Structures are given as structure tokens and as C-alpha cells.
Length: 466
Image (cartoon, rainbow, N blue to C red; front, top):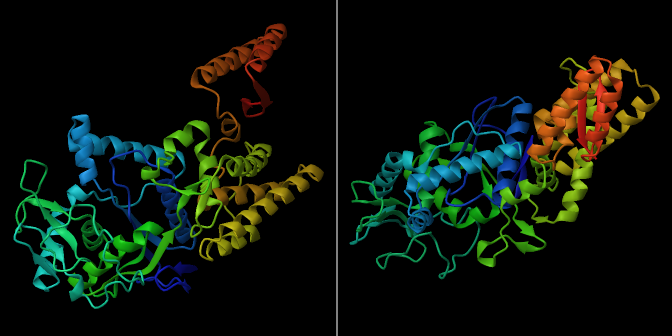
């Protein structure tokens, strides 16, 4: 398996720190607002990576954090006259629900910043002891970037004196413009935590380094984790600062491989709330089935910038529809677990730095061949068994085609109408059972008038939107 390392800027064979194991850490959301398509893209990319690693036989430990203490969260709580916990619990639950809607599996470990304060304090103390951090007269603690000869080797950039390094106000006592906050003192009644440095809150960059050390890092290893991932916007300063903290506080580097997914744009504009064009995932889910959004957002290679537009989304839906129509032709049949030549080729494609274009081309080819063969040899048991095994493999590794094929085609019908249709179908089945065919036909006409079609199969009666 090969991964493009966005720091070394080359594709590298994946060789884990421990045989047959893989550790992955991804920067998660700051839970003060609804998830947007950028969050969805990143979550999907690393969900796919985790699935592919497991398909290769690795025992994967996947961690993704929740930032639940931040100045933006505090501001939101004040604006809505709510507690910090009320805000973060609400948006954390919404994030989980929306990620589940697009087939993103929960990580193995999901630490919260507020539950990791002790680990952050411990890391700060190590940096102070190693002379890589300093305290200011007003009680802040800063990382001394000049003390780290490797600073900026991750992002390969020259520091711009005017660039912001953090999401809190800078202190006038900083030694260097590039220095960033590890601990910000709090002198009012806002939320704070006790520490040896005084009451305050941790810096944003600090939390991921501390969580990785707490949950994933092992002693006497060259790297804390195999893979660290996130959006391309996090490479600098966030990941640069994480890497600096870790190497200066511990005896290892942060990650062996760095992976970054591209930006999401809407009709050509980079998503940014300041530009007013941020597209919330919840809005997209009202218009499209979550699996359609999954298929669409994964259809472009993860390192490429993604231009979200409805025309391409509709095209992606038609492509996914073909998988479900094939699944519908074989609905109700069972199969044994078996490895097929298609599965080997699919995994090889995905093992080449998640080459989704090659993977989807293989799926298109498989679907077309299966349909053509079924048309000419509909009772070909070997083909049916192999096709079902291939569809199940696609579900497992890519997360496509996981639904009942009839229910998939019901998207867009409101719940009240669904309930009415299901009631009418149940009544029609009773009429058919009683051989009241006139009543049965009348009920069928009433169902069709609701804009759906019904199919009577050996597995029961199903319906879908026309």
C-alpha cells in the first residue's frame, strides 16, 4: 500500500511502526457550529483510509479529537445565554448524526479537549523543563520557535511576520512573532482551569499533541503515530506547531506519514464563512440522500480541491443509482464470502494512495458486465454469487450500496407519505390474501397516484419513488 506524504511530497510505501498495526490521528471539529462540506470531505477521506487499511489486514487504531473549549465556543455560549457544555453537547451530537448520515464510522478513540487538560499541562511542563517554552509576566506560556532548529521543516515555508499563529489574542511579551500560545492566562470570570502556571486555558495547537501522547504514542518509537491527517489548511500553522511541540517535548517525531485532503469550494470559491458561502452539510442532507453525498464527495481524489456543484452531484447520483439497480436485480439472494479478481483489483487501486478514479472505473466496468451477463443468462448462479460478493465488498471498503435498494430509491418522499404508502401496501396485501382483487387493484391505483411504483417480489412488496 502506498500513501502520498504531503510533507516529503512523494508517494511512499506504507510501513507501520508495528507489524500488522496502523495508528491514525485526524484533527476533528471545533464544536461551536454545524458541520460544513469541508468537515464532511475530511471525515470521509479518513473514513475511507481506515476502511482500506483494514481491508489490507491492518489492525487500525483511529483517533479523531473533539475541540470543546475554544474562544468561539465561549462567544457562542454568551450569545445564546447557554453553558459551554450545552453548546458543545448540541453540536457534537449534530456532528455525529450528520457524519453517520454519510456513512462515516465513529473513530476508535474520540478524546475531548476538556477531558485532556492534565495531559496538556504535562506536555507544557516538559517543554518548559526542556527550555522550549517560556512564561510571560501576565501568566501566559509560549512555545519558543527559535529554540527549535527544525521549525518550519514540516510546511517548508518562510514565516510571514504578519501571519496569525493562533486563535487567541497575542501577548506583547512574546519573544518572537512566530511563537504560539501553549497556555493563555484568564483573569476574569470566564471558563478556566487550574495549572502550575496559573488559571487559564490551553492553546489550540497543544491539544492534538497531548492527545496523541496520551492515547496513541508508545515508548521507544521513532514516531508517535503512523499517520497524521487533516485538511490542507491545517498544514500550517496547526500541524507545524503540533510537530514542533511533540519533538521538543518527547524523544520522537509526531508522525511518519502526513496526509492532507484538498479544499472544498462551491462553484469555484473556497469555502469560508467570512465570504458567506459556507455550505452546511445539514442543508445538503435535506436535498440528497447521505450516501449520494458520500459517493459524490469521494469521487474526486482526496488531495485535489473539490468544487461542489449540483450538476456534478446529479451525475454522481446517476452513477450510484446503477449500483443500486444491480443490487435490486439480485435482492433477496444470499452469497458466501469469497475473494474475486474484481476485489483484488479494487483494493490494489485504493492501495495506490486511495486512487478513487481507478476504483470507480473498475466498479462501473463490473456493474456493466454483470448487467449484460444477467440479461443473457439470468439464472447464472456463479455470476450472481460473484456479483453479490463484489457488491458486499464495495459496501465494506467504500461504504456504497449499504441500503435496501428499494428504500434507497424512496429518498425525497416525506415521512407522512411513506407511512401512508406502507399502510396502503399492508391493506392491499390483506386484500390480495382474501382474494379481493377488485379492492387490491383500487388500492394499487391509490398508491401509484402518490408518485411511486410498487413491485411484488418473493421477499415482499416494495415501492420506490418514480
